[in-house]
Image 1: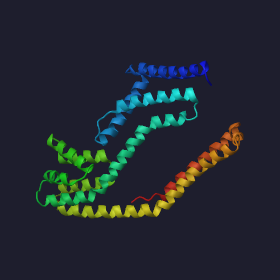
Image 2: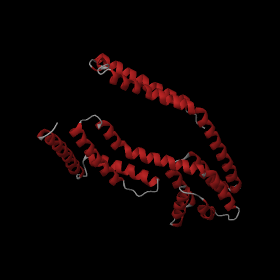
Image 3: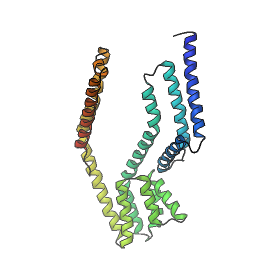
Image 4: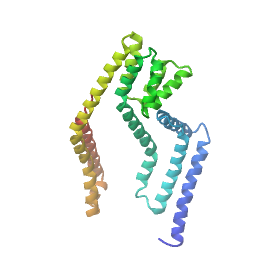
Length: 286
């Protein structure tokens, strides 16, 4: 398509995208609107994820960026065809949340890798000072990021008035790691019952090392099953694309009648059920 028709098409797509942006801005300016209420909840959700990563809460900036990218994807879809519009919009909508969760899981993994060393360092520091707060301060420089950042934040909270218990509970709430909960629980319970806290921490460090060893062994044993599950999940989609490319219209009987759609729904349900069952079989909790 060339000439005035192409110009009209592209201009119409740009005008529609601009109209969508203005409409969203107008609706968002009303604090009682449904869009504004749900937008505030989404921004708060992004801010919580950013705070858990010890990053500045910039959820509003991310949400506005998503709106702008969504409008751009809509304009491109109108101008050049809607073939990849669904994929683009899905990436725009789910991308920030998925990426922040990926960063959180990577952060948790890095913290868990240093837990046994943290417990041993804290136990050695407690042999020199009876104060857990002072022992944490002595241990902080020995830790690597991001664990050092979490301990530093806990110490700052204690300096401005928080108790040790509350600071450690806040750390556990931010990180959300079962292994870290175990280590921090040993500190809190050891303080409350008045036991030999250095010995408790040394025992905890041994248990954490054994748990890490067992998790590595389980991952190695289930790696083949997880790879097979991935193949089972992707293979039907690959076959669908190959058949449709080799013979266009091959699946038209399934999309031109109610019975065909029922068959498609049943096939998709069985496919999803098989994937979930396979994931359950290869999942081993320690």
